[in-house]
Image (cartoon, rainbow, N blue to C red; front, side, top):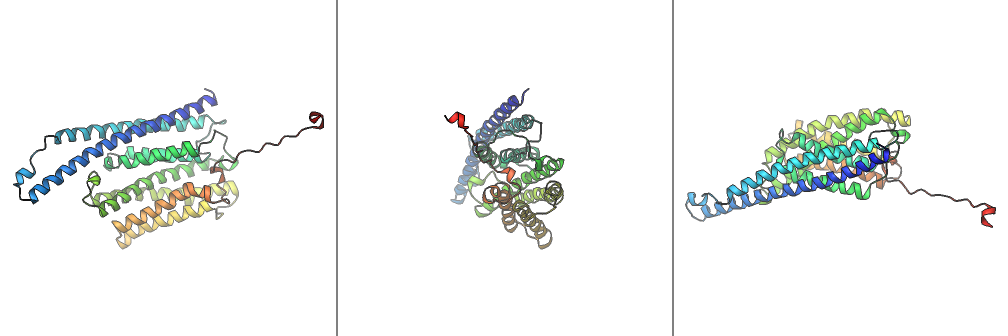
Length: 334
């Protein structure tokens, strides 16, 4: 296959992934609507009992309950299946993107490629941890995030395939970026759990949050994911990153804006884990710190490229249009 064919395949695969992610999101929303109906029915039964109705009347079987249960289970399984298919298409798009370059390379040469890689890790981590951490409730959150990020990448950040710049042409790039992207996916999932915790804590009886597990489960899931992502981020930012910087620019630390914000992110998450282990910070306080860390993470991932003009990571910013100068000879002008 030619490089052009690989490029077309990558674009088609990322489009297919986006469509399937959106279908999975619709299925997840149907599942949530079934849970919402169930929660409203349960609340109505409690009101009947509270009003003096016999207890058995308040909890008698709802004729539509079985239908709601079946619909929720069916669309939940369908959403997971479609998400897995979309992740496969997403992976195919990344592989084809790397194969489209001459010479072949990893698909991390510009902001578009970083964006689709980061969203892939978030979706793939969700599928992998779905059963282990019981993340079925997280489907609309993860899928909504993935669809939005993919749309942003395709619409605003897309760039044609090009060879890697000299600074990126290093195997330390592969090590550094793999660690950073895996950690970013983990921190994002943990941040979603922290956000759900704050909403559940603020609106404990909201029917819209009936699908979200209890506060203790949310706090535990958030902590476990952050505890995994933090050492990976440490390796990517404080070990492999400086080694790559020394190889590319001759210095382990350059006070580059991305380096500084990556370190700020590390400090916030280190504080999060330290506070939980020593001061007993759990629940609301820990969730707020985790979301602060997530904000610094994604600002560093995207915002620095647009708000800083001094970063040595400028390769990740959208390329400026080329200026072509034409020289007209005296003979041609006559």
